[in-house]
Length: 238
Image (cartoon, rainbow, N blue to C red; front, side, top):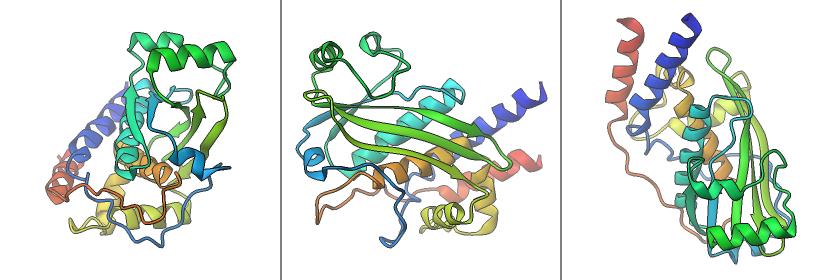
């Protein structure tokens, strides 16, 4: 009962912060980029429309996987490498997606997916590790599969741990913005929110996608992050 209550509070914190911190991703271009499989960036740039399939909750609750999927979708839109749509698990079209085999599809499955989804490629993946606060961490994988050839054009398989100094340094840079999200108290509150950690994870995954030289990434406008953080603090102090 206590664990369920704590998780519920944690999700509530994420909801309180989600919209208000949408513009907290203003960071320097010198930030480290996570490792990614990218054999041919040019093949990625040729894609017109891609469908992101809601991530599978292999090691998390469906809610965490759904929220991370939404964050990845928004981050990819801002990246502007290709047009992307999000396919929810509740969609009947997901019935044509084989489960449990990762990004490998048969020729018949590729043809079925291309016909049903009407796209050039799909993004499939899962949340492969998750632990809530304290010592929060999240692991996820995401693969871009060309439906015409079956080739994997790009992929990320990474873990983000708040106990890792390099990850925390990048998180602080990510949340530093005009909304004054850089102070230590704000960072500690953000560590308690799976949705906010998911936003950071999604942003880093999207940054690992190769963009054309000179491409300008869209940024969300900064809004009331400070107010949301005050609300979050009250949840823990009242």
